[in-house]
Image 1 (cartoon, helix red, strand yellow):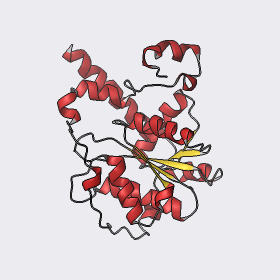
Image 2: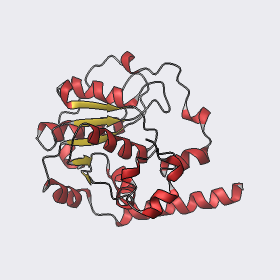
Image 3: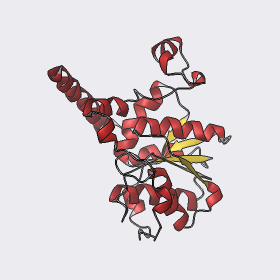
Image 4: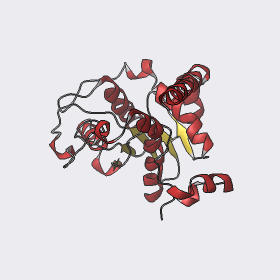
Length: 232
């Protein structure tokens, strides 16, 4: 069983790498997506927080969302992410940073359920729908954006892609604002490492734990395949 799982892991890794190599450049993807701007909301996937400072990845994602908001490319921001590897809810931490950067609180939304990239996209999308948002995009780094491209296509989700343009981002003030992270602490936190094996976490990365709304499974095949994970 371990050999089979290792082989599958290698195949999946190769597939992801292939998607990354052959995907359009961030610049090309943005040019196409910007034709549909402004967006009602962009989804920003979470990153673990160590309790002291944001990581480079979190900085890029939060600052890119800030750039998109300040330029009028999006009207609202949905930060998505649960307390996964640390006790801090990633969505709430990013929301605190976003507010500290000057984004009005009424334009910030928090999705605290997602533990994997696919869940960031889907649960962020569901929150957007609940808010009545119609035009939605995923705003994240190039690798994650390319990785989620096939997921979005597979389920025909109306979510655009606005990957980070490094040259544009580096021209911005990337200073880390001060926040109090205490409100983002998840009581009773248990790390995903202690709850799920590596194989189970990999399955989560590929969307195997998503609780679907039936209306988002648009074909008979998908409704049959994921019928045991449809929630009311």
